[in-house]
Amino acid sequence: MASAPIVFLLSLSLVFFALVTSQTPPPPPPPSCSTLKILGLVTACVPNLGGSLLPINASTACCNALVGSGSVAAVCLCRALSLVGVKTDTTATVTNVVTACNAPISANFTCGA
Image (cartoon, rainbow, N blue to C red; front, side, top):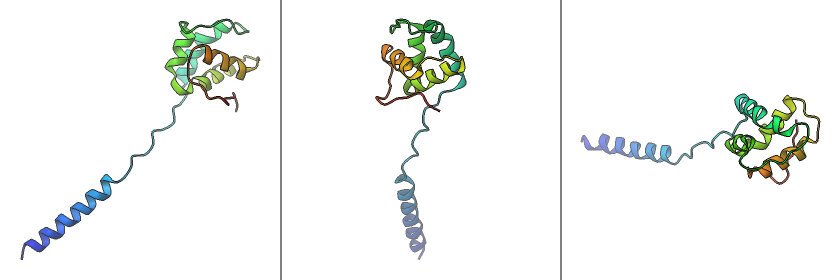
């Protein structure tokens, strides 16, 4: 007589376990461009630009900061340049710098609002 409640509870446990383990975890949040990253890029990259794009190679502090920013490197650099009021074509500047540093950037990237 006691086996019916045990079987019911075991069945319920299996159903619950199946439901819980079949759930996929939520996707990770998109990477963000924190204030600390922006300030680091201002410090590392803007003096190198000097109002115009100077040759930058992968060993510069700017490139080290960009590569450390991961997939948001270009977005962070756009924000850093706008923060200090760089008036040049920021999309071209950012694309050139990020490409020179071998950091990831999408083919259709633009600095935008």
